[in-house]
Amino acid sequence: MITHLLILIAAVSILDVAADEKDEVLGYLDRQGFENAELAGKIWDYAELGYLETQSSALLQSKLVEAGFEVTRGVAGLPTAFMASFGEGEPVVGILAEFDALPGISQSTSPVRDILEGQPNGHACGHHLFGTGSVAAALALKHWMEVENVKGTVRLYGTPAEEGGSGKVYMVRAGLFKDVDTVLHWHPSNRNAANPATSLANKSTRFSFKGVSSHAAAAPERGRSALDAVEVMNYMINMMREHVPQETRIHYVITKGGEAPNVVPDLAEVYYYVRHPDARELLQIWDRVMTVAEAAAMGTGTQVEAETMHGNHSLLPNESLAQVMYKNLERVGGYSYSEEEQVFAQTINQSFGLEESYLGMESKVLPFEMVHGKGSTDVGDVSWVVPTTGLRTATWVPGTTAHSWQAIAAGGTSIGFKGMQVAAKTLALTAMDLFRNMELIDMAKKELLERRGKDFQYKALLGDREPPLDYRLP
Image 1 (cartoon, helix red, strand yellow):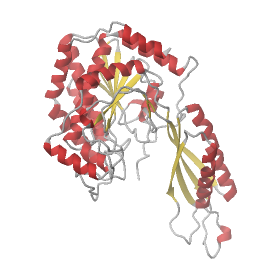
Image 2: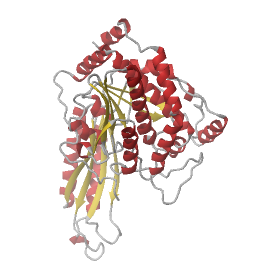
Image 3: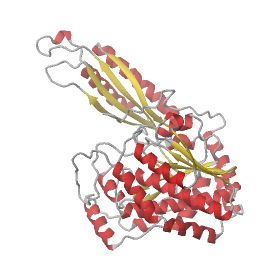
Image 4: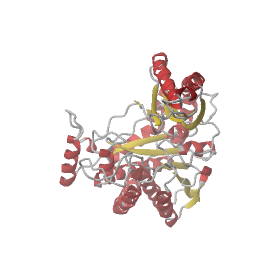
């Protein structure tokens, strides 16, 4: 059936937006380029962590209010989340905007590793560009809708705490996407691509073990080590790895393990992520992880408390929408480095230790194909309730991986800003096609229903827990 949809896309007479209208929007975004870069640079400087993005969120909101958008703040019980709308009626085209940074990775625009004292956070996933580029696209759409008297609603979703906080999940759970026809998003990367993509469903929990402290030498028999419980749990999970589906990914870190060797630790904590392409399989594996935690507590004479931190569904691809976005990315194309950017990129490239160089990919667009990602994102939950598609653009030097100092460095320079402009342009042109042609939206909705199945009912993997607004606090 999905193949039939793609044939239908090729066969149907798609009312493309007039070339001169698209040229005007591209010119508008070019004229706003410096201002967009300045805005992204401020958010890069703030480098605020999930649910703590007060300045970043307020800055984006003020930009939208100034332009005439109606902004609703603090939605879904998230102080830094917001919705900004312009226009009225259908279709309603949503655009996602992220703006949280990552902890523990210092921020600098140097092309060599530069650890700064007193600056432990950084935009190692480029969300300062993500939020700004999406807002830029929304503003360009407003400009076009006013000039051409286009009916419909563009809605920008300010979505906090993507990095482990699942901000979008709470927004989906609150029903904020129920009246949306399609959703567009993008993400910083080292390549330009608009491929339909999947990801892994993900669930995470902090396991806190409580024991009994005692002198480890004088009275060890009176102690019950919480650290023993953590180590026993980790051992059993590592044995379990042999007996889970091969697509499964399990990661953990010990976040608390005691303070002194001669004190039996009465408190220890381990933080687990479990991933799988299928949410149903993931939940079955997760039940086994919970059983292991209880067994570890029983075997060590301790008690365990489990706090689910986040849970994300996998990305549900929509090839119908992806085809439209890919067509527009091809029109926008990549970009070229200046001489100064070329020197910067070559220095960054040397830090990878790779035999092959990928420099030059920033000017190209990758071929259209299905991509099976190994990461996780809370965009996944959005994609199961409304047709969703996205793109990636070369905001980093080709060869860069996300969550790295190299991503931070390039993302804070003109290289990042150029890639952001490619994304803003592609988002805007894609939304223009959707506003002009409801057939595209109808096909995307049909594909969504087919992929998720007629019996699908959305349920957040993180359950009914309240948002962990303090999850990034020390």
